[in-house]
Image 1: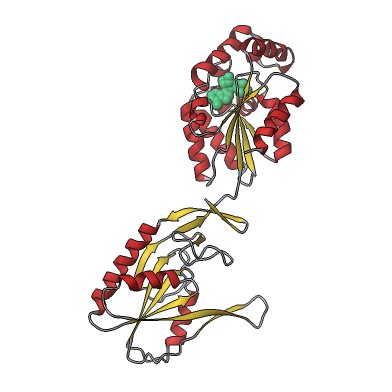
Image 2: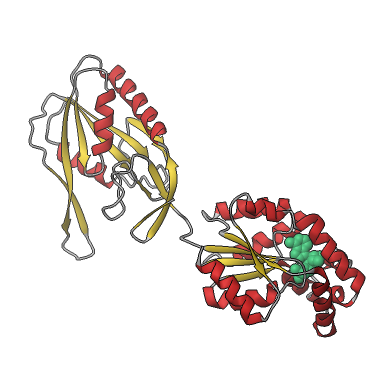
Length: 369
Ligand code: AMP
């Protein structure tokens, strides 16, 4: 990932892919033109890389020149008129190939056709390395296209974002979601995840998603999801993965503009961790850290029984169910420590002490991410 000005971009098209597309275009054009000497015209600034690499691959003699797009303010201040300047050579009777880095709306192409109308060239053909079919609004024929791309903003290989990025040898695509901080708050039942998440979400402006809370909300409202989840939760067992994953995806979608998330009680299995990675990936984001509250089992049992006196949670009221939840944690969930350790994202924090002290410990980890 790279950052240019205020925006983040992710790798999109490799230097090798660009190289093969240009090689293919050079072969096609050389075959079509035969032995005639074409004039390749690049449109500055963006096309300098394309033209330079393309003509090195062109297998026969050719001429190369450039014209430049210049912006003029229109009559209305909102109007920005683009004009091509710098065409000084007499091209009458010549075979001219315009070499473009990218064609999106086709506005530049309209300008190309306008300035060539009276040039009496023999042939005018258009070749472009990148083409955005969804953005193209004109009817001009595109004779040679290297790579079709979706209608998303790209930089690199001559293309810039407000002046930066032209020098990058490969192409990057803008990230759909700009930078997010996503934390997994981890630990056995009763470790204090919910309490701490409540402090952290305000401090770091994050959305807190507790899968346990969402299930309880559904149970209270007697939804189908709630009814299904209840049978597992009452015994202290995990709700099936697919049900939980679908629910979590929906919760994340509801908060599309979030600065990031605190996931509390999710993931609890490897399948859920995989699903979470996929979800983050689809948002052009990632989990930054799993922060685990470490608390001794006997303290957990004591804490949960204490909480059960006021929480009204059936799964807090009975010591056998509490112990089953802790066993479920060690059997199914604790393995996730390895999952995140392998990615250097696991941070253990002592979960015994005052609430404030533990918040400070967690904040130290987050501030250092
Ligand atoms: P919690 O509030 O996190 O202690 O969760 C209470 C109960 O909700 C758990 O014992 C499970 O039955 C269910 N639950 C919560 N999150 C998950 C999850 N990620 N996967 C499966 N079951 C879950």
